[in-house]
Image 1 (cartoon, rainbow, N blue to C red):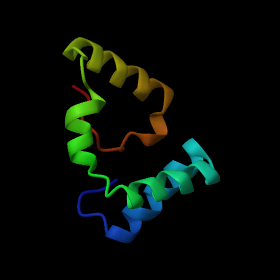
Image 2: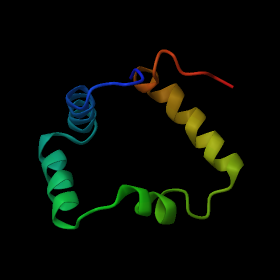
Image 3: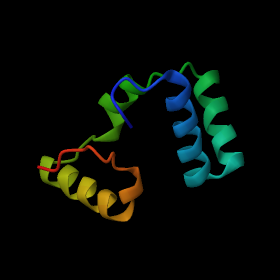
Image 4: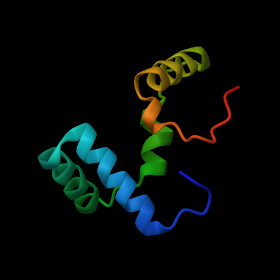
Length: 80
């Protein structure tokens, strides 16, 4: 993704990733649940996504993800 990407491009990329990862039916269920529950990703992420995970565990999981999914890593990402 590039900085300043247009909303339509972000939506298209997001939908493609959801379909490729979850499949069509599960993507529809995911979207329906978010709409129905007034889902707040930021609040969910703060309370659930990295709960009880140490920094070392987070870095390890991020590294594993990067190795499994290099196509999802932006080309201009800085590796530290």
